[in-house]
Amino acid sequence: MEQLERIKDMERRMERAAKAVIRLSAALEDYEAVQGDIYALSEYYGSKEWKQDFADDEAGRLPADLKRGVLSEDAIWNLLSDAHELDNRLIKP
Image 1: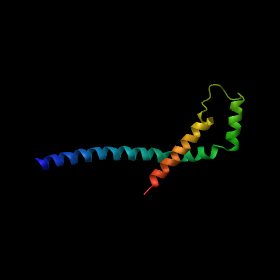
Image 2: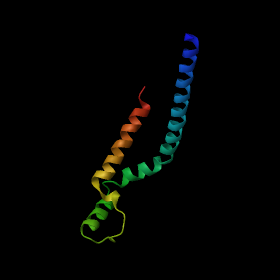
Image 3: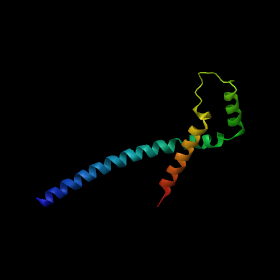
Image 4: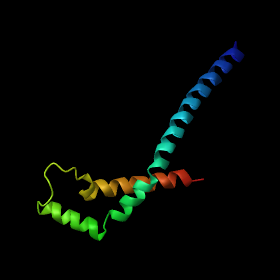
């Protein structure tokens, strides 16, 4: 009976690991696909253009219905920091 339990246990482990590998692979493909976006955001944040856009938003010169999360210092900083931490996790031996 011990042998059967061991095989069942290993089968459960394999199924769980296989699902995790598939999910992580899909997530990595998504992340790889947005690397250009992350680079563009990194270049934009703190640039002259971003500062002007931020100032125009503060002065009320942008449309009220314009999505402007990118002008939130915390939102863009947090995203770039999270991406950096993730990159470090991915290259960690």
